[in-house]
Length: 267
Image (cartoon, rainbow, N blue to C red):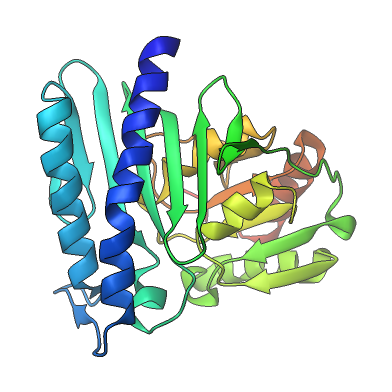
């Protein structure tokens, strides 16, 4: 499978290159984002990039499934499924802020085996292959290895993504970490893989297309990434996730999460 993954990674990196001009062009234009029926933001870049990617994948890998944030899809009968989030962080993008990325993942039987996170404005492209290394613009990445919350630099997602009792997790982590940044989005997981920070956490508003690309990048750099209860992440995952720079830090963070909420809150 390794040879296949190398070829698939080349394809994913090409897809990132295809998306950059479209993302930059729309972001630089005046105007405001539109809204979907569910109240979430959507931009022309979300739609154009996913259509571009789908056309490429249908030509190159017609036997693979495709699941995208904007146009849905299905898993392939043979197990290979591309998972697409053309603009992850559409709220930032639509409001003219730079904290967004393009996410491309490939899953085998629901397990993320390849991930690419491209920052169109920043010139940074993170990638990872399951069982292999993580890279930033072709250079190997390594997590910091920090092993305790009181020494960790944490990226904590938007407070609104911690509803109800889960708001206690937000406050507990903010108080426990040595220093925190907030609402950094998916780029925080690249920064963790790069050793720039030690913990990244997102709240309950994530879906599989937000999650899958992050897994091979974090794990390829030596980090740990799971759901809030320590469960492995997959195409079917949704809800809160946490990534850390070491097993020891991960265990401490999961204990904090469990103790911060009422029994039965994490489902």
